[in-house]
Length: 361
Image (cartoon, rainbow, N blue to C red):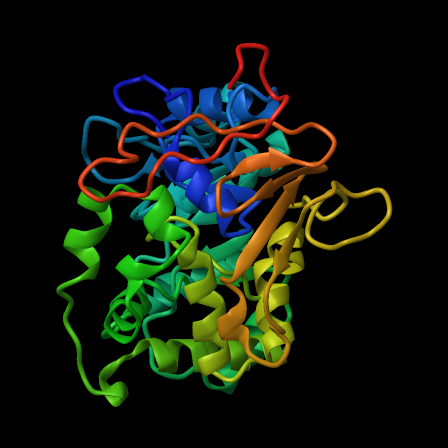
């Protein structure tokens, strides 16, 4: 969202995410000053991109230059209130080593009207205490191959959500490696337009592969499906991997794990909105909610793999065509070229929209 406190006036990361239909993001680990500045710029229309919610800087339990020591409820209240004043709707309880410390953060958040999303950390017993203690959800996958009835019966009696984050998928080869291996990511017509070649191609062209059965992401997705079927709401969480496209990888992986396309779409929309307490405004197409939608050239209910064929995206009633990310409709406005367009074979600068500027562009 920025670098050294500098927020770009036009971010290719924002445009790539929005072009893939990502209209609202919750970033559970960022730099407090930068992320909330960027969020306010988006909210006031000064930058184009998804609307942004965040925890700000994590409440880190290990030693470091941004550690957040918690030895009492007062400590926890100080951290939580500080982040709330900065613009956070939630805090990230990140590897606080003792359960009492995590519980103090939870109590501080309850008193402050905040949510708490913890780092899963690849520790199963740790994850189960997160469920029992009533966190907003568990973020990252539980690091076991299957969830048996004890886990299903326990978790389904709570309101704790689950964001398995399939692009990371603990326990073996993950979703990010899978989709790089199985698809030509660098050739994606949307991604290759809005992500600089120098960023995209080194990661996407020469990639590792393995037999299908070696990819543990399938088993993680299967377990997520089983938990959702007993009442544990599952959300997508693309971990910032591969701007915008990562959200579609999450849906595709959930379908590979047994979800129907509609269940996967709900995990990417209404489930996430409810998880964050935003479902009065976003998450579904209903009267009174914000006008967010994507137009897709395909039938996603028949083939979830068509979900990334986005032709237009609307956020808050403003419509953008994904081929150019020019705003169209009632208030047409051309996007300015990025610094990398037209260089080294990158996509040429976009065509302009007539009557959008007084300077003849």
